[in-house]
Every structure is written in C-alpha cells, then in structure tokens.
Image 1 (cartoon, helix red, strand yellow):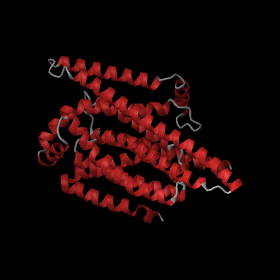
Image 2: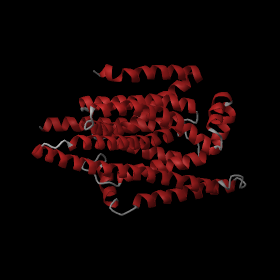
Image 3: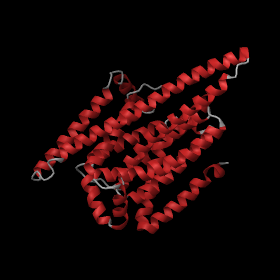
Image 4: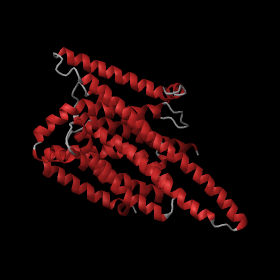
Length: 365
C-alpha cells in the first residue's frame, strides 16, 4: 500500500537527485534534497487539511484534485512562480530569467543578488504573517505550552499580527538603510525597496487569506444547504441534494486550490533562503510537491498520520524561523545548509514529541 501510493514520488525523487548531480555536482544533490525536505515539512499540515476535505468529496472530484491539481501545484507554483519572482524582481522577461539561469549563471547570480532585498522582504513578511496568525490563535492542543498559552491570550487583540509584522518590517528597513548609508549611500534606495516589497508580501498574504476565507464560508454554506436538502429528500423523496453535492464539491475544489497556492508561497519563498538557483529550486520543490500529494492520498486512504498532532506546530515554527532568516539575509549572509537544517530539526522535534504523546496516551488508557 505504502509503495503503491508513493511510487511516483519515489521515481521523481530519483530522477530529480540524478538531475541535480548532473547539473552541478554533489553540492546540488544536497541542496535538492534539503529543498525537498523543506517543501514536505512546510506542506505537511496542508496535506492533512487536504485529506480532511478530500474525504468528503466524490471519487470524481478526488481524481480532479489529484490530477489537475498536481499540474497546478508542481508546474504552476513550484516551477513557474520562482521564475516569475526573479523576473519581476530583476525586471526581466520570464524567458530571459530562465535563459540567464541556464546560460550565464554569473550574470543571473548578480541580478538575483541585486534583487535579493526585495525577494527577502516580500517573502519574510509573507512567512511571518503565516507564523504569527498561527501562534496567536488559541488551540486545544499546544506543543510548547509555556510559550503558546500567553501568545494565544495576546492573540485576542485585533490585528496584532499585522501590527507586529509592520513593526518588524520598519525595523528591518531602517536597519538596512542605516547599513547602506554607512557604505556611502550607494544602496540608500534599498530601504525604500525593502519597505515596498515587505508591504507587497503583507498584501499578498491578506489577499490569499481573504480568498481562502471566502471559499471556506461558501463551502460551509453549501454543506449546510446540502444537509438540509438531504433531510428534505429523506422525508419527501426530493432529488435536489444531488445537485447541491456537486456544487459543494466544486467549491471544495476551489478552496483546496487556493489553500495549495498559499502553502506553495511559503515553500517557494523559503527556498530563496536556501538557494537562488531556479533549476535546483524547481527540482527540490517538485520532488517535495509530489510527496505532499502522495501523502494526501495516503491520509485519505489510511487516516493514520493525523495522530502526530505536533507536526503542524513544528511546520509553523519552521516557517517563523525562515521568515526571520530571510529578513536577516537582507543585510547578512547565512549559510544555506544551516537554513535548511533549522526546518528539519524543528519538524523532527515536533514529530518526536508527537510520538511521546501517543505513547503516554496509550499507557494511560
């Protein structure tokens, strides 16, 4: 069962790692592997959410999500989106960005390095909002109780996450600006670039979150109508519930695609903290995306990994760490391997905590 579910992911992993070695040696092999682990760890909670919704959908809509959805997820968000980010930041056409990445790595690296402050500010703010909204929400299950309990109380203040994110952005821009002026003002305009890009990341997060919320509300309304129609059908033999089921499934599909796009953002943006090479990025994130989809199918069919309740916490703390790292890299260079390993350590710790919790519950019962 496990081999059957993950066979395509295993095949893509082998092909992607070989391609990485052929492209740029064993260093590339390591970076592709770290990117794949990063993508899987950041998107694990997305797979759990997807599985919970997919269980309610018909076999037809499950197939649509796992076929059409994988095209959007892998080729759209993980392959095209990194190119678009580089193209916009460096003011190039997407084709020029790809051409430079493949034919003139040095020039491409220079352009990405110049564009890095805007990429880091945009991505840092987007990831920071995901992290803040998570830690400020009161949850029944808490991993780091001493930290999460007071943060949940603070979260009752309206718009607190937005305020904190904007303060962090202002501090980052002022720090970078001061650094630029100390070097003769050559990059004095970078402080403004950081501010604009950071606000752009904040707006993007709020738009994606707003769309997700919109579809979620529509989905809940459709489910309520569907339940009401089923009750009427049971009493009077009405067949209207069939049409409502299809409509609800359609909104489920739209909602899932918006969710997947939002989780793709953090994977792609986080990847820029590890490497600027879009080829390695596409290989690593593509491998990770295949595992996330396979994991979604596995969860739908087995439903066993839901027991590891702290993994969602670990993934969000990894997102928070990446947000801070991206903002720090506006001014300072941080080793790519260190960046990748922080996420792996946090996810691993949350997994082990989940295992220990399950053992305690089993012993108590």
